[in-house]
Amino acid sequence: MKERTPPGAALTELILEVFQLNGALLDAGDQLTKPHQLTSARWQVMGAIELEGRSLTVAQIARRMGLARQGVQRIVNDLENLGMVFFEDNVDHKRAKLVGLSEDGIKTMLAIDKAQITWVNQLADGLSEKQIKQTVRLMQIIRERSG
Image (cartoon, rainbow, N blue to C red; front, side, top):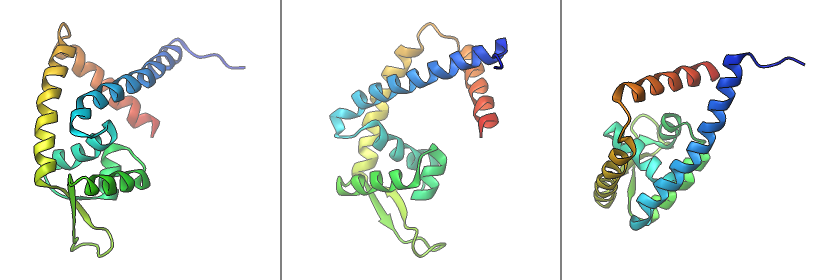
């Protein structure tokens, strides 16, 4: 049986830590969004639209966030029922509607963003911008190589 190289062992440790970090971040996101009757998953979908600055199809949201299209469709339907998003016709594709943030969705995102700023600034206390950017770049490389 093959053994992991030292970098392979270290990367395995990092991957396991990322799994645990993902869970912790989802829990933190749920706490940030709970006052607005949202979840991390709903916030993530709304955030994809907010970041793009325009309406997107469900498939575009799924690709940008690395999620399954079917899961995003379910979340978008829930968000429409909550009045956070709306559907509009897509001139490029008759069946793939565009999803945009409603006025309530925009207001909710602004409130969550305000809470996230306080939380993330506390979380970043004592870390250097250089450390964080190096970590981001490493994670991008690993993501690119794993796909």
